[in-house]
Image 1 (cartoon, protein in one colour):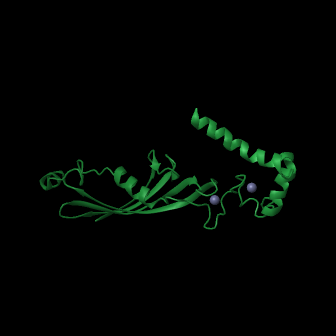
Image 2 (cartoon, protein in one colour):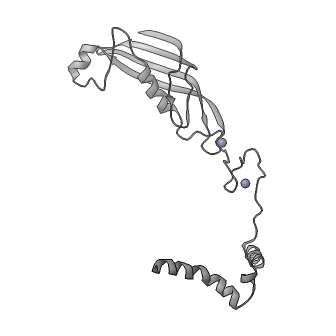
Amino acid sequence: MRKVRRTVPAPDDLAIDVIGVPSGTDVELDLRLESVMEGVLVSGTVRGRAVGECVRCLGGIEQGLDARLQELYAYADRARDDGNEDEVRELQDELIDLEPALRDAVVLALPFQPVCRDDCPGLCSECGARLADDPDHRHEVLDPRWAALQLLSSDPDVGTPGGTGQNGLHHPNDLKDDKKES
Ligand SMILES: [Zn+2]
Ligand SMILES: [Zn+2]
């Protein structure tokens, strides 16, 4: 058994859509390499910094990443004997290619729905403002009954009781019927 601690630069695309480890930033590997019957069992932790975007408010996020990794690297001849070389990673001349295993471990550990904080209030559904920046943010909500009155008073046709108002309402429907027939 051998222990390996190493800091390596993150490979490209160590990420999912919304968050990932920027390429070239430090990734700390703390691994155990164990000799087993079939090959070498690699297990340990991967640590780095993940950078992304809050899915609620689109604000920037930077958070620690701590992933578990475990992967068997088989001796080349044994992997072939099993007939499933696609699924078993192989030792290559006493070296292991850690990148695919690192990628799997990190991608699994990244949050699919990262948020800047658990209670992030997100964006205003009316205007898109960030609610976290402005906790008192709100829009003037009119009582629907008053809103109806305001509509009436702003449209002289509808406001007039009787004939003209009703014409105003029927007019759009008449247009639609005409289009269907033609
Ligand atoms: Zn947020
Ligand atoms: Zn708003």
